[in-house]
Image (tube, rainbow, N blue to C red; front, side):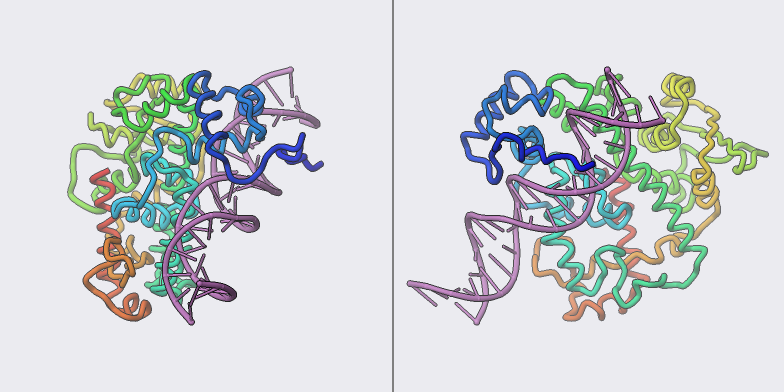
Length: 354
DNA sequence: AAAAAGTACAACCGCCTAAGG
DNA sequence: CCCTTAGGCGGTTGTACTTTT
């Protein structure tokens, strides 16, 4: 069964929006909120389908959208998150306030992807093209560790994006709600809207850091229950009263589809103290075990490319650096390991300075 | 100055998922 | 359960604009 296209019914308008159309849509939403998108065009006097209206609003007319050139920081964030989670534009967009997934996607396709390609890096794998089929070190264990990390982080980011979506749905006035999401400090967000508070970003990396894989940071720990077999799988999460840690671990609540009663307990327990959490999720146990193994930073970062030493056309881009070379291949094969560290450090910066 | 090629981005398309009947 | 619908997502296209030849 194929569904008829929404715009094929009743000779609705397609193509670019006119300023008059925009005005009608804006005025209607300002007054009534969008409500049911399908019903909106008729009520607002627009010859458009609901879907077209929704896209126009979310990608262009919303008052909390930032337009114009992407900043250095934004470029950095996009590339780093893309290296971790791929083309999950909506998930990436949750880390770039006031940017839409569509805008980020376009920017990636028209700017960043080309830049990486030009320097000989596969924009999908973030590895040098000549090495895209295998890991740099050839060490399958390290690759597996990395894979686990990426898997975990991907799930976390997706869950986070879902949280944002869900919280948006709960607010009746779309304009008001989007202001809340984009600008209010986490603690000011209505409890029913965002529980737990939205994590800053890359918190699984932060958890690893706390575990001692990356640094000697202290103050919280994340570890299996003594005597417990991770296969069971039961873990204890011991949390310091540290909001960033709380946020990072909080996502587990989402990722593992915690049962209602546990969610309640979780919400009552957070953001401090200790709790035991049981999950049936096998991959979670695998990931957890993999990350619990002591893995040196140099191994973890294997497989990531240096994108900092790239000879960019754009002098303002973070891809522009001092190690300028004419040929992308040369750049990548030069001191790859050292550059990997630089690359990963930039991710750490992102973790530590969200 | 005009045509061709390249670029940027808004908008569309089709698929997927969740929710509700 | 199954079906329908709304809304979200990522991929792709169309077109206006800019740069190059």
